[in-house]
Image (cartoon, rainbow, N blue to C red; front, side):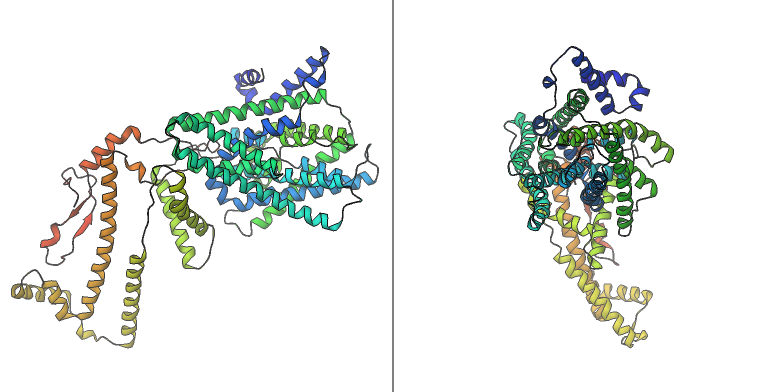
Length: 634
């Protein structure tokens, strides 16, 4: 019924664009709740259970967000995402709790609460909902830089908020009067242990599912099942060890997608994609429907002052936190956060499913629990209906940069990789270990160790750069010696021979000693140093010619085996629905064309210059357009 309502909402394009899906589902839940109440249906039949939420409804949504997270954009902005997610969440929790606690000391609220109780509430109300953020920003098509910071912050913010919630819940169970200083130290350490432990569990299970799908060819139907069930097993394992289950399933989805995509066929990847999307959509629909139902069925305590101060605190402290964090980040970043970006980051902090689920799971022993639950629903309604509806016209009014609606070409992809390697080389030359060096080291480790173990049909590619380094060292030393000699006046100018005289001498020597060893004889007689330079050049040429021969042989074998060039060309990252750049490229239908192109336009060695008197070195070249090129490889 809920899905049918969403479909009806989107039949009218203006109505569907004006109201987010979450707002429409909440309205449907409210109407359904009032209807059930009028028919005297017991509220326990449609009340929201926190255990069902955390065990069955939340994992598909978080896994969908992690699996389709654009990895490159995430790791390029990892510093800002982590600052917004963890530092910002801690700051908002402390600021909101202190404000409400001080106001409570002055008797502004109807119900009293302890310090740990209000910190428990502040932790859950600081959780930003990634579902609502995705829905709004995906429809608006904001630029990638802004999208990944808002989306990444919302995703990892949930893990941080849940960890803080569990920590303050333990403090509340101990009792404010029984907590000693060692408990605070243990609580601070547990924050990092719970978060990092969840990430570690997610990585381990990601490697497991990648290894299993590598050998799934005999029973291909089971591969999508493993891809869905094993991340859920990671979520349950983290819950069993009291670690961050949200960070576990997020990290599992981020790590595994780079390997399982290569282990599945095109049909398998398509099935996995739509199955994950279907589960996430169904869970999201049920959650917001129950959010509307719970407004009718739950016990509430309305406190206008508490609700007003809470909403104001959420808006004000998030804005202050974003401004301070961006001011610090802009000092160390090449791409700065503009004033418009900071406004969108502040205004995009929508609350939703996570905050509601944590509010429902609060201990019944807390006296202010009804007031906290009512305030949580009010904050969610405000952010979804006010901020969620107005953010689209605000983005248009502020003229926020939108994402480019185009596919990344092969040439652009290749040059991006060249740029990455160049930047990593520059960082290595200047002795700085930056993000390009870290990415290059990870890609080397991934290519040599992880991919051969976790992906099928992937061979190790070893590249020995020692020969190039030795040749480069010889050239540098030779140039340095030449510079030193010229600076000291070592080689007289009269000893140098002009090009015309050299050509005459070459002709005379050719008549005397023949063509075979004329170059060596001429170099030995005219200039010994030039002879050494020619020898070094020949060695460097021979080294690169062997590398080119190896690559030619690799291409020829790939064509003969029928595997095509896609097995030796670099792979693109997994498709990313959120960025709008997904483009499934399958070369399996073009193998025949590739074979014809390679056979008719093969790489060859041009030995026609062997009879040239001025150069007895062979020249390698590619002939990709000449139809008369020989089809035989040397």
